[in-house]
Image 1 (cartoon, helix red, strand yellow):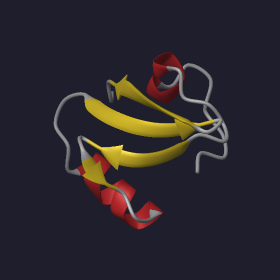
Image 2 (cartoon, helix red, strand yellow):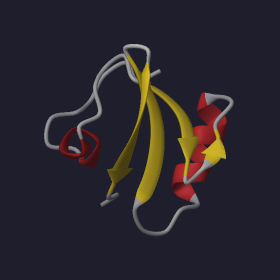
Image 3 (cartoon, one colour):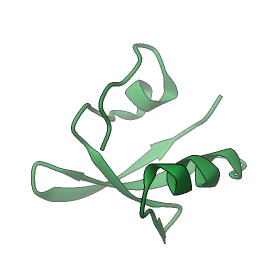
Image 4 (cartoon, one colour):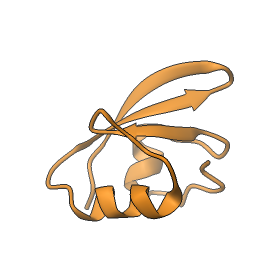
Length: 65
């Protein structure tokens, strides 16, 4: 679960919010924070995230710096 989003960050620019739950990165299931961090560090290019928000699922693309 996202606990905070830094102003001006790629996450904020993509529309991510505090309380969102990231369930997939590039269509691969995320099981915990450590796995999420490994997936993000190992990625090259934009990240496709599947996010649960208020009972609904949405896809968000994040362009890392």
